[in-house]
Amino acid sequence: MHEEVVSLPGSDIIPSMGKGHVKIVLPCTNEGEWLRVTVDDILESVDVSSFEIFILLNGDRLTDLAFAREPRYRDRIRILEVKEPLGVGNSINRAVWPGDAEYYVFLDAHSLFVKRDWLQKSIACLEEHPEASMVQPEVVQFVYRGELDKGMPVERSRIQEMSLAYSCRWAWPYDHPWDIAEVQTRPLADRPYEAMAGGGMAVFVLAETFHRLGKYDSEVGGWYPECMDYCVRSWMLGHPMLVDPTVRVLHRIKQEGRRYPTRHLDVLHSIFRTAFKYLSPRRRDLAEILFRRHGLHRQVEEALQRVKRGTWLEERARHLRERVHDDDWLFSRFSIYEERFGVVSLS
Ligand SMILES: [Mn+2]
Image (cartoon, rainbow, N blue to C red; front, side, top):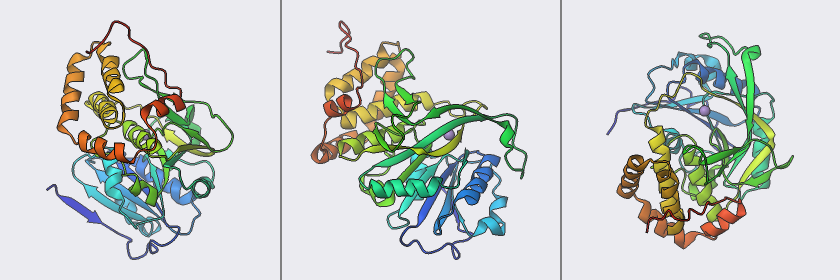
């Protein structure tokens, strides 16, 4: 067992987790001052009566949590610290349990909000669409020029908005092996609409639904694949993913470089695991060929070995019993183009 430290500085003050309670989960690995700034912006913008901010600190060597002991934070924040890095999906899974809230918000700990209504509107959307597996807002990708000073607020003039993200979709022919999912950068409607998957940066869900659909897959990691896997599974179980383009969340694009050297292999493994669990054998082969065509034989072998060491077969057996749609339906529903490879074949 890994050592775990639980501190609940304000657990006696946070309102009881009754009807309407919102749990905002912030996984944090070395977010530094961005965690504090995200928390500040949540506290300034949220006006629902019953909410908490649950920080899942994991494998963090950088972030100073001293701010959380100040009175204005203490009654809203809970912290669970895990020594090893868990990845986003497992951090979120660890941060929630049945009966703890009615709504969940999963946010990257480098998020900002421009309007005060973001949470109320998302909750209203979930209430109007109780069958939804999740709702993604309009995500505004931004870069921040310069560094955040310790204890200082964000300077809005340093924020440079870069692009928009509404949802994510598999794109199975591709030029670069890591472009296997494409981001939808234009809204398809001006009101909530269905899409294939969320990108994972800002996720709203009914707590009961999230538990019933099986939370995030504990073996899937990377950066967006856990959300893709969850949405693919949910769609096939009859639960749509929704985009609410009227809700806006700002999400920072990190410029300090990638800190996770194995993440490409994680993505490859995750795509294969999702394919092994939920797709037909033909598409399982296709997923493999997509990467082999780029010469990634060693990575493919490594990822496949990881998949086969895992629990995909049990998951698949259960999923096939419960699903209401197959992968032909899914690929057709979202017009996922599949290249026919002609001479290339595994058989
Ligand atoms: Mn992020």
